[in-house]
Length: 331
Image 1 (tube, helix red, strand yellow):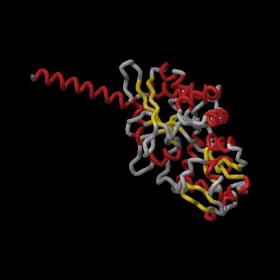
Image 2 (spheres, helix red, strand yellow):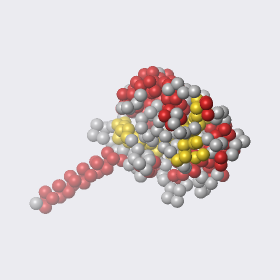
Image 3 (tube, rainbow, N blue to C red):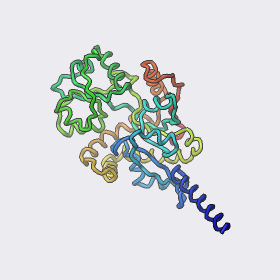
Image 4 (tube, one colour):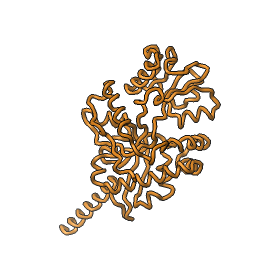
């Protein structure tokens, strides 16, 4: 009986170790390395390159078994920081907040999904918001976050307007087309999705990119992030993962129509026409003028973090180059 108990205990220990390896990104029975990738939101054209890499077998060819999951309510970064996931989609400002908090998270950006910030303010042309200062006395649907308000204040003030005169109404807008035709005058959007949706709805709109108002606001959004601990322990896996992502996004750049079909297959509920037209727009945004996909320019990265500190959005300065690396991208 004692021998049986010892054998059972040993088996339980082995099973426990195996389960821990599977959850933490260890090697699977077929030899593939398990990687969990957390989205920032529901599947959309920000994520197409990852789905292409999955569908085309780029991950499998690299010896990776990649699982793509939805984010929990508290966001994707905590999963990566705790080692429960290996990579996620997030934003430059979120990384700044995570690494400067009183309980810092172990996170770092490893690739830029888009080379430039495509977000900005959309409004109906009939509302006369031709530039940021025209948001005075207009209804703006706000997420009510410090970073959001600081960016709005920056562009409105720089344009000669009074930020305090904007009518801020807390609201989470999930349907921009309906909101603009109801009781909202202006909404912050990412043009590659909501802007294209407005085009398809034949809305006559005005739109201004934040990056065009002030270059310091050409920050990286969204990005792929990991943790220093994982990167240090699994550098080859990280490089293999990003090399496969690179192939996926390069395919989407060259073949937006086919890439859209792949996204539609993996994203139930996505409007096919919206995905197709968005993909055409995004194919020019993934790499833009950069010589390779994913690369992050340190000057732009540091400038935005400096701006965040100056505007008291983070409690401490971030050292130059802090919070990101290009080390794991393919050359």
